[in-house]
View 1 (tube, helix red, strand yellow):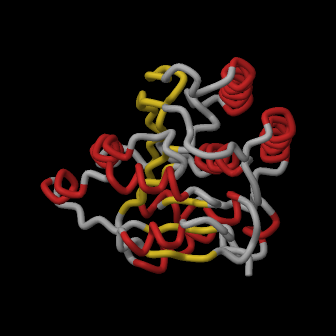
View 2 (cartoon, rainbow, N blue to C red):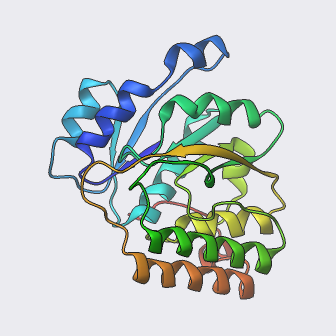
Length: 238
């Protein structure tokens, strides 16, 4: 699953690196879903050229895109989902590592901070901010996460069916972690490579950092979002 918003260049790189043959050898039938937040560049064309499933999202923001993708996944009957950002920062060739670990774990998180970070892939502010948020999350919830803000995750069907989410923007990964902890899902951290993004960055370091921190505190106090309490779970925004 690839959330996109004007990511044509990065999407081309991801498409070229998807290890379809390797996954086929492992016994997996691969589908690629692009969850698009209203791109005005060639993202849709690149998706069609690579025979990806292009799904326009109704709500705005990465969180809304992810929740839509999770809903579509549960409707599809597939067994596992690997999501990664489509800006070229994550190496799609590493997808088999996630699938291998999902055989014994509910959730697999790609760890940039203990992996290989290319020069200029992450600013010093983002690097220290990621470490601080990750440290705070582990301290608050008691379950180790090595890279809270990673955009590279793998999930079993069980994990997605049990997560309860209402995030709209970049705090979605933090809420995924808190929901996994609250639902007692097994988390496995694996080191990954992280490269410089292609195209314009959309994450605001300070503003989104505060949004992520706030989500950690809110979910620590109120473990389940109101949407889940009234039976909506992590449904998409219409």
